[in-house]
Amino acid sequence: EMTTARQWWRRAAAAVKDRRSLYLTRVAVLRPRPASGVAAALRSPELEAAVIRATSHDERSVDYGSAARVLALARASPPALQPLMWALARRAGRTRCWAVALKALMLAHGLLLRSDAAPRAARLGRVPFDLADFCDRSSPPSKSSGFSAFVRAYFRFLDTRSLFAAQELDDDASGSGSGGGEAAEDGEDARLDRVTKQQHLLDLLMQIRPYGDGMERGLILEAMDCVVIEIFEVYSQICTGIARFLVAVLGSAPTTPRPRPGETLAAARRRRGVQGMRVLRKAAEQSAQLSSYFDLCRSLGVLNAAEFPAVERVPDDDIRDLEKIIMNHVVEESGKEEEKET
Image (cartoon, rainbow, N blue to C red; front, side, top):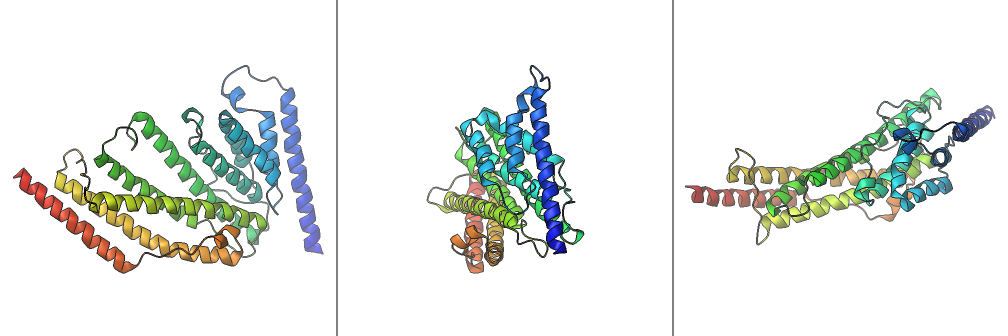
């Protein structure tokens, strides 16, 4: 009964904190607002109230109604993405409650997904808050370290994802991306670079898991549901990128890499082959890790993990065969090029 009473008091105190935040948001409406500038553009009491409701201190579950309203605002009006993200940043930046921080990360994840489909001018850049050193103060010491580690792992993934998306946006704006009129020989190098980044994201995603006992909470499982969906999206992109690379290198009309400054064509071919094999070996390693990760998810009761088929591991023999084929192809093509040069 003591434990039940303690939980009741904690929930009551958390509810009071949420009501206080909502009250301060309403009071902000009465204050004089700047006529222009960043403060005026990125502060909206209505948006902040929606964010507060969607990131309540309730540790049991997500308020899907409030979360859906926030994401609906982002979907209906892409210019609202920035104010919503900054409202989340203010909420996440000052909390020491793992539930609030995790809900903020889940909402930020949803906003980043909306941003991917938004017009260029409305897209989000880097996540504007930092939870890399987050430390929970809302749970008993025996449990707070596990919740803190979970939040930090989710943030590391989300921060890196937003960084890569911002870099791609900058590359596209400067004309150095893989779209438009770029030559095919540059496209394969860009594809390998993109796959390498996606493999890094996959590593970060698989680090989002319970790090302590007693973490089988509804909110934790809901967050892992989001993670599993992202894992399959990223893994699908990795497989597609590798397949296209193999077709480009081993197909009937293989593309030719463009040498970097001071690099011969033969060296460029070898570089591409080595990078391609590094990606293939990493894919084999990650397929085995994914199988273990999904076994863990299923044992915890993560619903989305139960709906997807088991990940097929890339056999080691296939990797070795691919390595021989690719490297033989690279050596053969390099020899032909050296003969031309002489």
